[in-house]
Image (cartoon, rainbow, N blue to C red):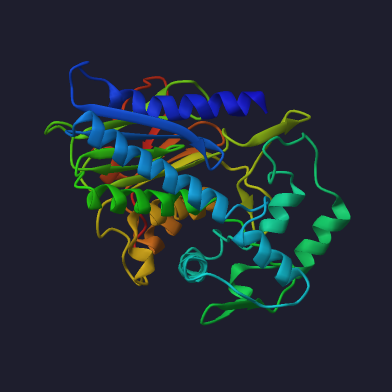
Amino acid sequence: MRDGLRALFCAVCFVLLLAGCGRQDEPLVRQESFVFGTRVEVLVYGQTPERGNAAAAEVLREFDRLHRSFHAWQPSQLTALNEAIAVGKSLEVSKELAGLIRDSQAVAERGDGLFDPGIGRLIALWGFQNDEFKAQLPDPARLAEWQAARPSIGDLRLNGRRVGSRNRMVALDFGGYLKGVALDHAAALLKARGVHDALINIGGNVMALGSKGGKPWRVGIQHPRAPEPLASLDLRDGEAIGTSGDYQRYFELDGQRYCHLLDPRTGAPSRDTQAVTILLTPGAGDEGRTEGEGNIGMRSDALSKPLFIAGARWLEEARKLGIDQALRVDAAGTVYVTPALQARLKMEKSDVKLVVSALPLE
């Protein structure tokens, strides 16, 4: 697990290494914290130190509020709902939680169920609902019980703010979703404070506002097997990148890597992909979305999961989701990139096998 934490630290550092470089006299404020199980960083440009620090601090407080309110295994609104579902009861939840459930249900449906925040019990069985996890496989009997029940966030029923489930095995875990929600909250808070030039990074999920002194924010995409960037690109105003990788939360047993990205179809960690990065521009991937799904940060986080879990079918999944800028590193280390993203990338590693792959026709 120490290797995973080291890779996590490097991933965040390299994402912002390119974005944060500059003169010491630049009007750039930086604050960081450790939230959502990862290192987060907020960069504010063009403000006085007082205004910039106040805005960044407000963002970090909001991150902490979201983390505590919707924690999957420490007492929170989410654990209270999961406990009620487990005993066959419904629960009236906050307006905010009801909205998160509706939005995540819509995204899960669009992603063919490959992204499913209703598999919290499965995540716990694999030991990933802990700050530190052991290198051990889940109990076969309990895993078989979960697979037989096939719980899904689609099993939840909302009546206003009252939530119940027809399947008692459903347990919510917003680990693959909440970081993107937090990006959207951060952008709204910064704009409300008059900050229009900023970069927000939550463990490799990044959103750009405005520019850095008239120049785009330049960020790196972490190499999944080396402490260095695989590629870099300029982020424009309102764009967000979401990355899912097997190098942050994982354990190794008998030479096999088991990551926290679980396939709801099999109940096991996905093994065909090392990393997926998607780039969303304002308006991209909007086809068939709900109003809540329009939040670009949330979608950049959630929609990278179906592409990761789809494995070799990642391009088909990308087409369904309206994503035309994506990169995938497969289990062998080959880098596949769509033409639209390849046109914007600068490859930082020259020794990788790069394949430009067009989206399939409908």
